Amino acid sequence: MPHIMKVTLTILILIFSTYCWGCQCGPLSRKDVRRIAKQANFVLVGIAIENVHYNDSVKLERNMRNYGRDVKFKVIKIIKGELKSNYVYLNQFESDCPISYKFGEQYVIVGTQIKEFENERPFSETDYNNHKIFDVILPPPRQIGGMTIAKMRCFNVEKELVDYWNSIVKNEIVLFTQQCSSFYATSRYGKYFSKKIRRHNSKLPASRVSALR
Image 1 (cartoon, one colour):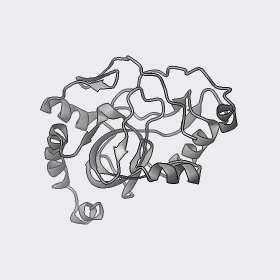
Image 2 (image 1 turned 90 degrees about the horizontal axis):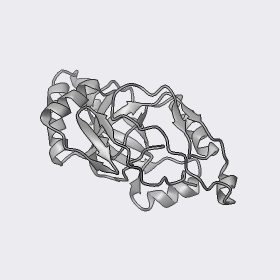
Image 3 (image 1 turned 60 degrees about the vertical axis):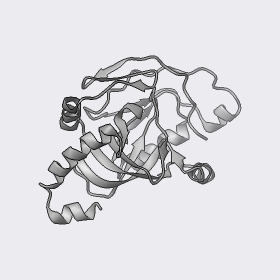
Image 4 (image 1 turned 90 degrees about the vertical axis):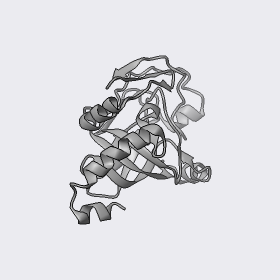
């Protein structure tokens, strides 16, 4: 069962000279891109390969659509960050501006690492199915990139799904991202970041670069 869809918010997020306003993102200059790449936990290029969910039937149904929001992400190139695996997990819990990733499409991801998920309003999938949960709690705004999230506070996600993501974050890199911090690799902003990729990869050992291809 997917987490409860939130009503459209009109929360202004000002960070790195870019913003989100009701799922419309402000423009980025090359200077903004450099600042984001410098301050973000992770900036990565890769592809979404599958949805992440504790219920295999739900996961299979979503995968058949070739799109996903909370996904396993195969890393192709690193702009910023250190990885021991070719994969990270992208999470958009409580995002006011989520994005659906098309499987096989390359994206540039600006990610903030999540260390733990904390359920602020525990309810079960059964409660949701029985229509016991009607209201939506508006979470605090999330910044784009930047400081690690020690605890991702979850207000509108069923307990089983929060527990499942906590089991993942123990052993894997989990990143928060959203529409305003995810870009098609072939887009103008994606190309801005591509210049940073070439500079960064030129400093990596050959073995490390090839391992992520």
